[in-house]
Image (cartoon, rainbow, N blue to C red):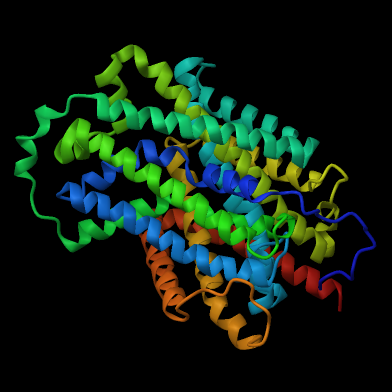
Length: 444
């Protein structure tokens, strides 16, 4: 059973300005995916207009989801974020399973994915041997975890600086794409075949996955200086900036390569730098990706530790991580999150395709709980019809329905992609269910 109210007096403070939250959102969304996914989308679609519509549609759907989250985050502000929403809508037991899954699978798996991606590109600059990618991943996760444990001021300062450099890196891709002479692709692009519904659907899945991460803003709702509308403004500004950058990146790549060549590339952004600056540009491009991953890892550490802290606040078996340090951070939660991420990285390094293994491990569980959170908008409206909602989602119930259907589609797609690999995440949930049973029996 949940533990009784704690005597601890140190609680999260309102220390994050809207611009700080925007930086966290941009840092989480704007990961390494934009350097790879545009070619995957182009490979499914048959025209420049279809590609641009897909990326704009991804931004629009993300805004719809953000409006749903803004309602929840402003009506029920909590450092627990999604964990807190689930608790309000479904009760403590389901919320426990999500908090467990997030701590063991979702956040730590994301840190592993980002860390290994960083390690792959950092190894192009400085190789550390056979397991170079994993070594770099472990070192970076440890370093940024310690930085954030020092204090929220240090963590958010690093985030703001990294976001500026990451946006500049994406801007470099945009400028390079428009500077390249793209006249050579005009003839071959005429031979593209029409796009069928299945290909278009797959393209949208790729796009939406690249927009993923904005939902993490819910975890700093209790730390927002502007409690009433800060989260909503940050979400709209963050997603708006990312959408603009994504569309400009695709316009630049289409200018440089055209649809057909773009769809045939396995590393489109790297190919762009090779075309513009020659093979010696590999280090420059790798540096841009490394900065992008650093930014996303730092944001994920900040967001992820908040949900672990909330779990520790509510359940006796995890009470030791439910402490808020005077530095303005859940220090113990950061350290345990770091340890689990390291274990996942080292375990994934034994797989042939460590990146793919971690995606299969995390994606189905993540989208399952996001689906439940989307449905919770309807449940909480029914439970608390008179509850003050500073930012109610407009056009209710149409927009929440669109969000729920979209997430259900992404859940199905992730299961289809992961196949039997999804069972790893399910096994972790089963372990959480056993722990929940033991905790419940112990208190009766």
